[in-house]
Amino acid sequence: MTSHVTARFTARSDTIDALRTILVALVEPIRNDPGCIRCNLVANVADPAEMTFIEEWHSQAALDQHLAEAFVKAAVAEAEPLLAGPLDFRVHAPC
Figure 1 (cartoon, rainbow, N blue to C red):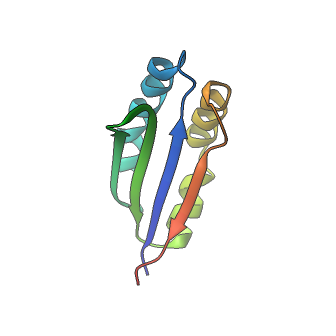
Figure 2 (figure 1 turned 120 degrees about the vertical axis):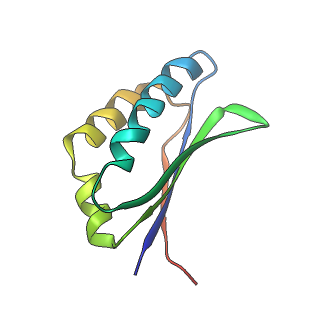
């Protein structure tokens, strides 16, 4: 069964561009992960500080492997000081 992910990052007003740079750099490496079906990074039209990854993975195991990768952990660690609040990470399953 596929796993769907939303990961919402909300930047502080003074860190929007810095956060966007970090997140945009992740899109292609995530798309190139073997278990990735799709990965999109979108911005909230009403609030440019809010950016969300919308991803689909072949399985929970593929997602777990992705989340354990060094580049993912490093990007999250780099992004955290730029955030206005905690990362909102959710895993969803098809209904």
